[in-house]
Length: 378
Picture 1 (cartoon, rainbow, N blue to C red):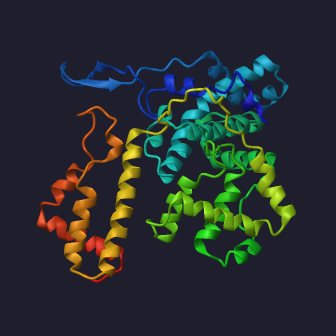
Picture 2 (picture 1 turned 135 degrees about the vertical axis):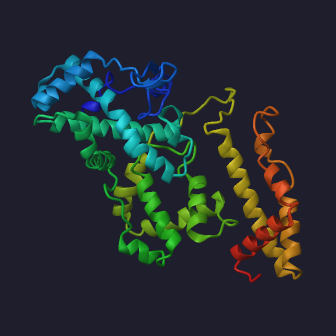
Picture 3 (picture 1 turned 90 degrees about the horizontal axis):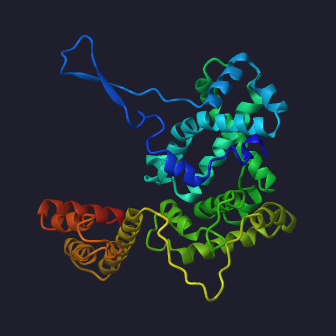
C-alpha cells in the first residue's frame, strides 16, 4: 500500500481517542484570554493559545512550500519516510474528519460518531483512518509544485484522494472498484427495488475490511435499510433479510465465475472473527452508545404498534379508539434498554410519551399520524 501504512505514521485508535478531546475545527483546550485594548478593563476577548506544532510538521510545510515534498518522500529512507508520514497525518486528519467523516457519519445515522473523532465506533474509525491514509498518500506523491497553503491544497484534492483510495483498496481485495448491479442480476431479481438495493449492498460489503462480528452479513443493519426502502417496518427483521440475501446470492451464482471473482474472493479476504476456547468466559461489551439501544427499542415498539393497529382495524371498530388504546398499551411502560442503568442517570425515554397521551389535542395528532402511515382515511 502507500506510505500511509507505515507503522510509525498511523496513530492507533486509542491514541486518537485519548489525545483528541475537541472537534477538529474548534478552539484548542486551554484557550486563555487577554484584555482588549479598546474595551474596559473588565472585558476580555478570548484569544486561542497558539498550538505548538511539532518540528516535523514545520519541516513538512517547508518542503511543500519549496515544491520538493513529493521528491523528498520518494527518496527518503525508512526513518525519514515515517517522519514525513506522521507529519502529514497531523495536518490531514482534522481536515478529513471535518470535511468527509462527520458528514458521512450523519448520513449513515451515526450521531455519536459525528460529534468527534474520540467518539468514532471501531468500524467508523477504520473508515476514517483509511481516508486519512489515502489523503496522506496523495499529498506525499503529488505535492511536486510549491504549496503555500497546505490545508487548502489538501482540501481541494480531498474528494479525489479519498475516492481513489477507496477504489484502490477495493481493487486490491478483488472487489468491484465501482460497485454497480449488472443488468442480468437486476433482471433476475425482477427489478425489485429492495432486492436490487440489497444486491448493491452485498457488492459494496464484500469490498471493505469491516466484518459483521461472527456473522457473514450485517443483516441487522440491512433490516433497517429494508424498512426504509420498502416502508414495511414490521416485516423488516434480520431473519427476513437473511432470506433476502439468499435470494440475491442465488441469482448471482447463475454466473459462477463472476460470483467467485466479485463476491467469494473479496469476501474471503475479510478478517475472520477470533475463535474462543469453550472454557473462556465472555463478558458482552456495549460497543455502541447506550442511547442507540434505546432508539433501537423505540423503533421496535413503533413497528409493533403499527402492526397491532393494522390487525385491530382489520377486525373492525373505531379507528380513534383502537389507535389510542394501542399507543397507550405499547408506549405506556418502560424501555427495557434503560433497566440496566442507574436511576436518574438518564431520563425515562417514554416519560414524554406518557404525558402526551393525557393531552387530547396531542392524542388526536398521534391518531391522525398513525392512520396516515397505514394509508387509512381519518
